Length: 464
Image (cartoon, rainbow, N blue to C red):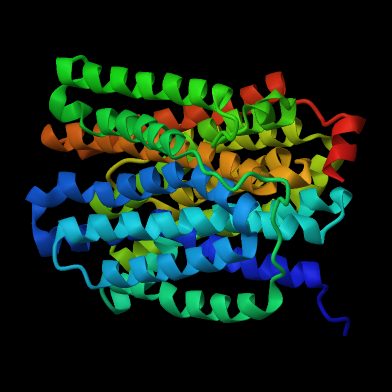
């Protein structure tokens, strides 16, 4: 039997790291009820920050991490990120209060932010440009499907052990990846890169994303049109404008805005934001429906969610190859229609009486197919044709786009659900969330059809 190529080994190793990071976006969903049981329902609002805080910190750290990886070494960044992520996971599992758990989740997310752009930057040089789309498709599918598998894995762990196990499970995988990575990975960097890092730009990026999400999370308590909410939204806008100005005028910007002049980068990143608004919200909402409305246990809800990720895994790899032939935009548009249709069907058909096989399972099946068409294809369309000196930065931009979407999507549906729970009508909040997910899914396909353009011969030459 032919042994795996070096590129395949590097792809497998780095996928372990990104799988753990993505898994932790959603694995705590099924543990939320256990956390409320331990620390009380009054801690609900603070505990929502184990989701939003993770996503904000992850998104905010990616651009700086991508810049550092390109300048100082991608292997070093990947291994450092693994260490920080494992420390954060350990502290999460040892947490004795909601505040400690939220703070540990932020540390965990920062480790993930450091290793993620480095991981794809380590993969890309191992493949010729014509094979990068498939490699990135697999990498992206692993990331997306790991997030979708979070409730399944979490359901088993919480049922057999307790909520702390969803964090401790990361540690042996981090140790294994670190040991193999020390031996397997070759160091690479952009030798022309300036070693100076734009700290003010990093602060502006964190402020922009953090303030925007804060305003959405707190909107049901403050009021959407209150003075406080308006002020926080305005502050986020100021930070965003200042960040863009900083990137345009600084000699060594945190984000090279020239990347956005590439049509495939611009379209895929915008579509990634919109897709992630709905994708991560869908995982959270479906888990809440199964546990809150149908009263499934954590294990049963995890098993009920499994058909969706399974179908996405089946579809993701061939979807990348089909996209190479027929075009990324068309495949993503097809996936977005299937995804949206399944969400609208759930909203119309599901009620308080459980009908798993006749109603929920068909919706989960088509959700999985739609997500499978989108998740890996979005990754490859954004990163496969980047110039080598921008591997980590381009990957960081794409992952940042998705995590901003994830953070804002989860904040939006959490706000809808909290408002509905306050009115003793959680079903209304989940159904409103499903409509939101369906709209964002359709918008993903529209963005790609209108904006995506295949790379030119010149751009392909630069990528090679």
